[in-house]
Amino acid sequence: MFPAALRRWLPFALVTRFLWLFCVFSFICAGCSSSSFSSHSTVTPSPTQAIPMLNALVSPHVLTVGSFTNYMPQEYVDPKTGHIVGFDIDLANALASRLHLHTQVISTNFSLLTPELLADRYDVVISAVAITPELQKQVNFIPYFRGGESLMVMKGNPDAIHLLRDLCGRSVAAISNTFEQQELQEMSNNCLKAHKRPVTSHIVPLTSDALQLLRSGTVSAIYQDSTLTDYFVKIYSQDFAPGGPIVDAAIEGIAVRKEDIATFNALQSVLKKLQTDGTYHSLIEKWGLSNGDITASSASLP
Image 1 (spheres, one colour):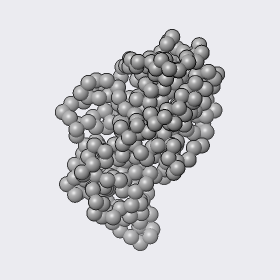
Image 2 (image 1 turned 90 degrees about the horizontal axis):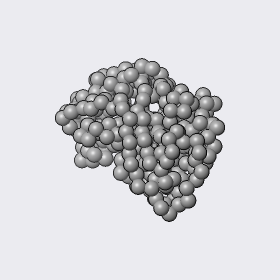
Image 3 (image 1 turned 90 degrees about the vertical axis):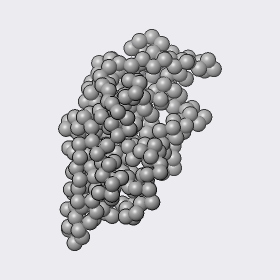
Image 4 (image 1 turned 180 degrees about the vertical axis):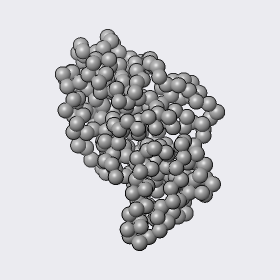
């Protein structure tokens, strides 16, 4: 099983997530939309807070954010409006507003986020980036979210699935060419070693396909990113439920260049205020991502 903190950095996983997240809304609405563009999000700056001296900004009066905008529900293109939306985008807007700044989100490939940040293309990266020792050598991180993987089951959890080991003898859906697919195979091997029936994996190209398999009763659970489980449980609350806690949890952070101390300190201070005054929690609730809340007592920071 691969550590979640390294999961997003391996090439084939990036390509696959781009492809299936690109059209995941086909289950919800009729069409898909491209997200390889820059998005300007204008936020009304708060008049009640002193403006920190942020002289290293790429553009004056603008917080320029790098993001891989094909990772629903944290950052993705709304197929109805063509706008970049998500929990991370809302958080970026809230941070910028408290600093009396507007927001510009620049969409790019996930593997380019750190190199382009270091090349001064944007001020920060907010894009579900897991904090790893390797990345900490290159940039500074402000922890803001907890990601990982989880199981999603039908409402009422008819097959009593609470942990990965409960999958022995069950049928489970996962997206093709992802780490969840690999881990299901490892779990199946573990079942056999324990003299139990193996996991029957149903590997499909799109999340919408997995949802159909779960609805139809073909599978007992879907194994996927925990944010997707939380989000779908929110929007389909009458149908789905979590099948246990986050697996391979990893803390995600806002990445800032090491030499840009002013921006780092300002964002860290504002994030603490957003967490104290309830703004952060309201965004967590908006997107249904309570398992990602790093202010919860169950979350641990690096």
